[in-house]
Image 1 (tube, helix red, strand yellow):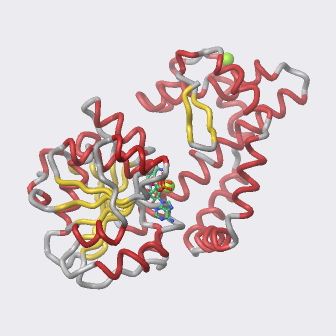
Image 2: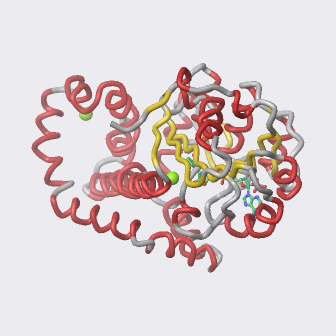
Length: 341
Ligand code: NDP
Ligand code: MG
Ligand code: MG
């Protein structure tokens, strides 16, 4: 079994008296910076001051610095910038200010694993990757829990890189959920596979196709939305607490029978072959190249997909229905980010 560590297996000591710079105050950054500070560690933040995230950092009591200044002041530099942005910011503002013995911490192995960032040999290179969205990382910490976290050491220059990474993971709440010791390759490739094939890509397309089939057959979009989207949360909660068998125990026999009867016809051996092809595409670097190339092209394809998806029927009817369910605390995206409606 993979080595799994909890609060009792480490301490914050390796980072006490040190300065941690969290670079970027977005989804992961805002959570890590506040969690580590609430754990009693010394945290500074780098972000543009005028942006929505910069203002949020100020509201939360940080004084956002330029990246180069934060790197100069810090012993441990946690990079919480979008993966596509990291190589340029690394070259311009991080690398020139990295001195021997500092620790570079990533929240995803992408750039190091695919070779778009190559840190010098005299710094520690570690990863602490919570297995959840940044906002959950903060919520869980606030209620005394923590998100399960992957941890890895790519380069140990000081002899205590693993202890520092463990202290960071514990300070961020990961020691409550379990800290799984892995390596950059495994974290990176399984993370990309999970989000593309099951969690995000596979799920979004299942919802869209299910909605299309029902509405094209003449059923009301409201019914379709509840059946293929809204109820998902209830199913996921059962799976999360007790696995597929507990979910199947809780649903009706009719639903469970239909699960076995129809499920394998929808997601069959051909689907599995396409999943294997997706994994190959990740492993051989083709996915990373496609992502980088589109970024270099102004994310043209990416932005077009985002616009087309926002116009899907399941989105418009969903928005209307969620407005009628204020207890769900519905959120809608605007240019300035998500707003509660
Ligand atoms: P976000 O997009 O939420 O945050 C990006 C932050 O970077 C913002 O504060 C933004 O500042 C800043 N930024 C963006 N562009 C630039 C730039 N050109 N120069 C300087 N700062 C910039 O990122 P995420 O938190 O989603 O991702 C960060 C890392 O965490 C990635 O490696 C990702 O793979 C990893 N990760 C993310 C998870 C998630 O839940 N989102 C889950 C696990 C890992 P500004 O507001 O000024 O634009
Ligand atoms: Mg990911
Ligand atoms: Mg039903």
